[in-house]
Amino acid sequence: MRPPWAPPPPLLLGLGLLLRALGGEPHQHFGSDGEHRPDFDQEALLGGQEEVDEFSKLSPDEQQRRLKAIIKKIDLDSDGFLTEAELSLWIQQSFKHYIAEEAKQQFGEYDKDGDGHISWEEYNIQMYDRMIDFEEDSALEDTEEESFRQLHLKDKRRFEKADKDGVSGLDLNEFIAFEHPEEAEYMKEFVIQEALEDHDRNGDGFVSLEEFLGDYRRDPTASEDPEWILVEKDRFKNDYDKDRDGKLNSKELLSWVVPNNEGIAQEEAAHLIEEMDSDGNKKLSEAEILSNQDLFLNSEATDYGRQLHDDRFYHEEL
Image (cartoon, rainbow, N blue to C red; front, top):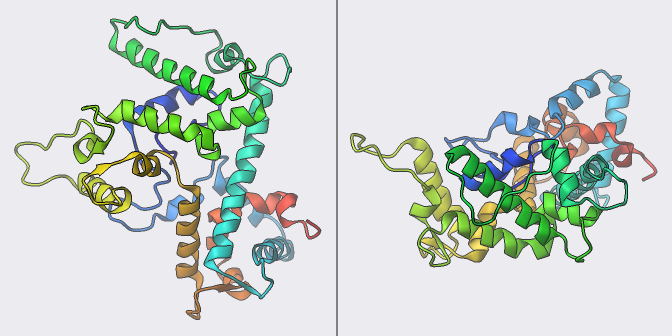
């Protein structure tokens, strides 16, 4: 699941703004009961299960050849074992690779005149088939239309912030920063400010637990909060509020609204070792991975099987 601010694939970015406004949890790796979600490892941006199904059609020898090649690349010290650190680093590199690849593909779709820059007009035409423009200070009477106006204006401000060099329009690197602010250091302050505008209702520069939970109010007839609220409260206290002061400062807020790819990668690496380490040495051998091939294919370690079709990953000479 995408984080609250992260833009979804082309043609859905406007709806993604609504997710940012509502808040949420990046990469729902665990269910409301705290248990690992099996389907999480099959959620890929381009459809992970389809990639795994295609891989299953290859001969067993070709399957193992490709998988062994990837295992060899992950094993940086060539000791025959994959550690949590090696798995985590590989997954992070995979994130960056596919972010760049997908951005390049999208860039060509948005850059209508092929000049190497995406203008705000080109962005609107790709998204909405027309140029949309709203007044900054003129609210609309219709509630839904006003919500869209607010979201569209936020999108425009983020577009302008991503335009780092001041040249009209976004080049490829700026477009990546627009689509994936977590990949650009200069975008993080903007993301924090945007989150404060959305959640900091009393204007003190922090997000309290009440503000974190948004509009939730306990049913007066209920004796306790529902399970999902208990889970969110636990995440607030134990995952985000590191200094235990009952509110999220800028750094803590960033860990909530921006997906921490490093943390996600470490989490997935730890999960793989926990599930596949049969001898308890806290690392994975080639044999342990091959005996748990389906689990490994449905993991971010192979980007849900996509790497097995991308020769830049499994090609022996690379």
